[in-house]
Image (cartoon, rainbow, N blue to C red; front, side, top):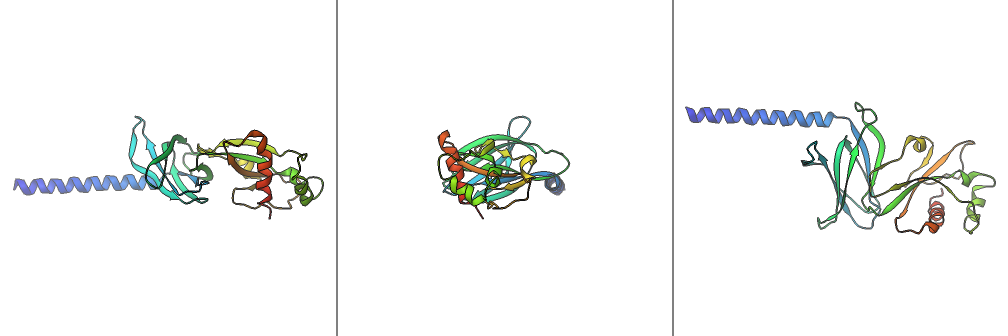
Length: 223
């Protein structure tokens, strides 16, 4: 009798644990999330994991994200707010680099689909460039032909981001005409429109080569 009673109690405990886990997972799935674009600007395939850091400083037993990103590809994941350890791994499962970040939502009750970004290469600088100079005065084509020389006007760089950390491009730029990494640059825009573009270059690039590098990238993105 005692044996069957113990087995019965064990079965009840198992069902209770399963129910608790089910509720926890359901609540986790229903929690508001932040969308993150995981880029891979390197020439090799890498994987990325996100582990939640608890209030006690300990890492969660489960990955919030565990994904592989091919070279020059982007993967979008949705992550609840919190503190996280981001780890980037090589194909041989050896750790490449890691960092920590905090993800917060503008409204804790609503998901945010405006992208945070993180580059698995972790060796680039990202920059927001005001592209309006391309459309002023003479034609776009004329400006670009003169840009090949050394006396062209400099592009206005608005902001720099460290690609080895999670970064967010604010609405100040994305709500305008925004040329993302994979987008083409329009040759014509409406009068008075402000155009911004997102570009990247190696951290090791000398400062006096940044403008020429940006013009080279622009020329390859013209529609």
